[in-house]
Image (cartoon, rainbow, N blue to C red; front, top):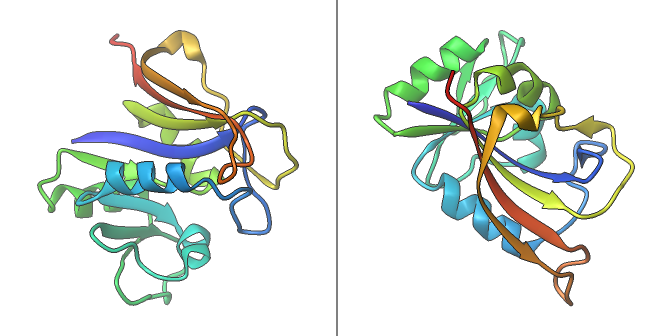
Length: 165
């Protein structure tokens, strides 16, 4: 199974503040939904709580250290191995890390693909996507979009794949 990350990050890698996203980008929301639909999504507890509910059409897997926390509609595990075990049972070809910052950081060394929506702004945050060493990655595709009436910032959809060896 391919382990991938899906993230929208500013030019300074900002991804969130006060457990909230930093922007509303409807096209990114559609991209996220289309990319992850039918697949297992792996997230930290705070990310799950910020969503307010399980994501429909996907197997929701939450990594937490809390042993007594059990939300409706999600599998709870206590480490990445447990998350990957649950994801493997879905027979999906790909599992997606969807946040937050600490989960991205812990799993980036194991990740084969990154779906990065690069939001072209620098913004204050308290959660950040980890620095990628782009020398270790191949850019498979990039689509660029300008800001418009529904999107306050210009952005690019990028797909990165880890180089072999």
